[in-house]
Length: 232
Image 1 (cartoon, helix red, strand yellow):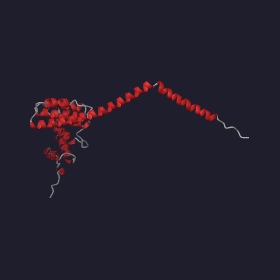
Image 2: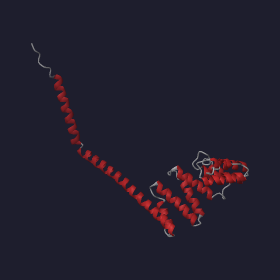
Image 3: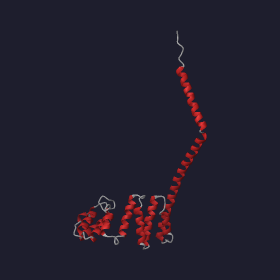
Image 4: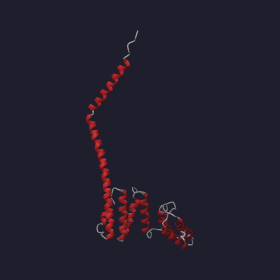
């Protein structure tokens, strides 16, 4: 005799699904205001982020155009408002714009025979941990070059030691300043060896290599092997 179908499992599943649907429906009904508010906040936040990014990009483009105009004005001698404009750009949100404005400000100060301001500006760049290291290293070298006669040789050697190494991209400039400080210390042989190392480094500009060969030779160190063979 056939057994009636067991509807227990089917019934339980249907009841369970209905309960879940009711719970989901009740959740949305009970929390409609909260969900709508959350959606609005999400849309506002997303829109704000997009607006901010677009605004920042547009502002950066305007700042680059300002810098280009400043360079043009300097080239044509229209410098009345240059310092003020550069000071404004030195507070820009873009790191590249800020660093470029500061470097230009320092160079303009040198042009105006204001070495004190130039040194202070380079120091500002060198001490700004938010700027990329290449900017800070370049500023430190320029600051040290301007301060060369004001610092003791020991201070110069210590300050530039991390940059005056063959593996450093700043080896040429930092090495030359360090070697000159070594001469002031009376360490002429050590200075000559450093000039010779600069002369042999193919990553250093040729003009600096040629100068280093001459200075090394004057200090009794032969660096002529670093001369570039002349084409026949």
